[in-house]
Image (cartoon, rainbow, N blue to C red; front, side, top):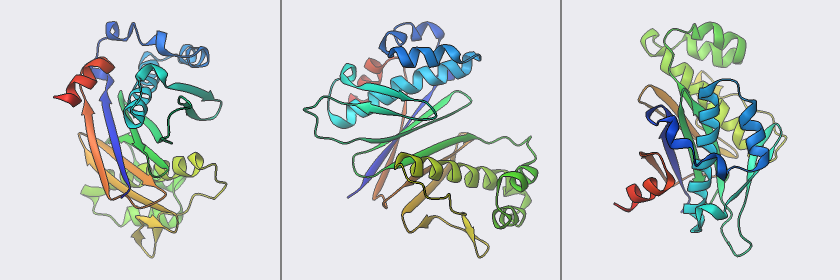
Length: 233
């Protein structure tokens, strides 16, 4: 039975003072990347994303938070290194949007996740014409006007999540079109997709194998210790 967990964290709800101890958890390569970000929000998303990644992988593997090492890779998602004694091979994917961080984990199958804020002020049909295939753009234009914003971000996030899934598998396969015969596709020969719309965001999760269960957990509090207390309650 294949399963996954989507962990969500709202960085906007946390004070900068809460992050003082987090920088000490980062590797030198992570610190260098952190310092390259100009925008404070992007720094915050990166920092909390790396802390959330350590926490969720440690929980999946049943090991201590401090034993998870994160290896930066230029132009690619990070890798995690666990103690040699650990028998779990964790699969994970990270995403962020407007201060929200999403991390998906699974012990069973590679994943790709994307979170996108729904922006009603954007010309989504123009964006679709430049970023989507003709079939995908035509599908969006055929949606009811009142549903078009949500439909655009659902398709956009699915494409982003599928791209991450392909990348996480070190595959050179081309990103497939997600509309065929005028219908939006939810699966292919080697991928499955699920999309949710909640709290003003579209969240898409792609996996290489069908998932039996997908749990969503929204963490509160500023530290991994408090997240652990929340989960134990």
